[in-house]
Image (cartoon, rainbow, N blue to C red; front, top):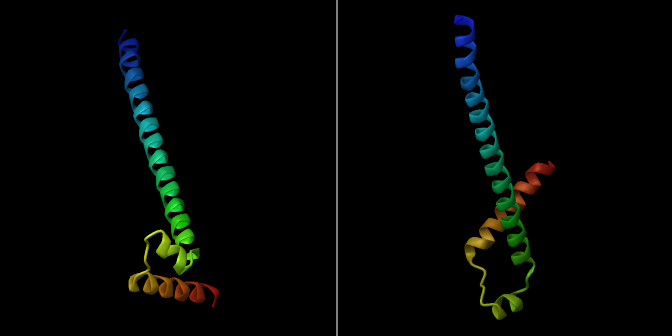
Length: 84
């Protein structure tokens, strides 16, 4: 009789634990995929912005600042260090 009681009480606990683990795994994967998509969108936006010429930037009312130039130099420096 006590074996049936122990089995009956542990089964819902195991199920609850598994469901909790599955929910946490799903939430982690959703956040990871969302972060990857957001990163790729930012990279694509930056690439498109840097491909525009200054005349196109003036037409769209977007201006390059000294910070953009500094970021570009830092990116070039990182690329050179990776190649070496």
